Amino acid sequence: MQATTQRSASDLFFHTEPPTRNEGLGQALLLRVLDEVDYGLLVIDAQGRIRHANHLARHEMATGRLIMTHARALLGRSTDLTAKIQVALEQALRGQRRLVLLKQGEQELSMAFVPLSHPLEFDAPSVLVLLSRQNACENLALRMYARAQNLSPSEESVLIALCRGLSIPDIAREHGVAESTVRSQIKALREKTGCSSIRNMMQRVHSLPPVVPALRVISPMLHNAMDFAQP
Image (cartoon, rainbow, N blue to C red; front, side, top):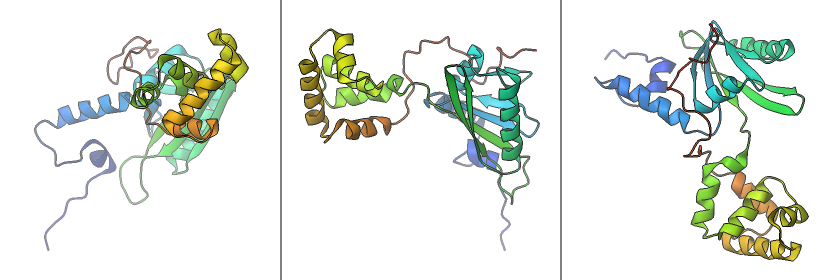
């Protein structure tokens, strides 16, 4: 019988083909792929250290809005938030999926803790942490969708306003036009997109691929860089 080699979960994660001399390039390419996902992503090892954080996760921790990092550990802005994170991380390291809702004042952030290890594998356990998207209207796919549907600039602006949850009177006030104008623009939106209602249109928008805006308003950081971490 021909011997087979068991590959670990990390091998499968970083390689879709047999390793080559350029396998380092493959890993770098994967990190770039993760940076283009419009959700913050972190990988945490069994010791609670952050092994990787994509672009949006690094930005979220750098702002210190609700989460931050110290000595490569994921912490909350307060003792209570840190305790919630720690409990969820410990449970995820034991193979349990957990959702944590962080809130402080008007700031909110949901975090999904997903085990990356399998009971039949011998690798040290690790956890994937997915952060909620902060503003679906900043999804580049929304702009791409507007272009694909041949929306005019004003129609695209109304679509974004609807995505933000604004009502017709609010949109009219913000755009400095009559409510009847906004209603006409929404009718044109429905006709061009083939949606039967505003709700149907919002469902379609929120199902668009999570593409990070090409022109980021935040300072770029090196891939997998933890320079912002406190020593």
